[in-house]
Amino acid sequence: MSGLAFSSMRIGKKYCLINYGEKSEFTLMEVVGRNDYRLKDLFSMESYLMSELIQYGKGEDFELREIYD
Image 1 (cartoon, rainbow, N blue to C red):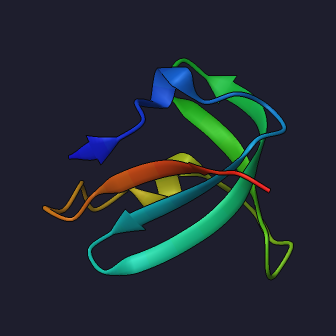
Image 2 (image 1 turned 180 degrees about the vertical axis):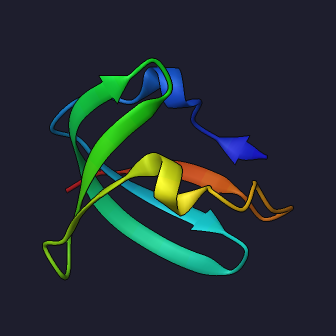
């Protein structure tokens, strides 16, 4: 595991998450619980929860990075 910790994420910032070979790019929209966040996909504009992205665990390639414009 490398990159950022969930606790360092901030509302309105853009992030890239890689897990089990899948790459997701999103904006953090709101904190909905102690360890969960509402996200908005940068490409499809779909809204989903962080818990949905990591529901099967964290793979060896797990990485969370901020996207800088």
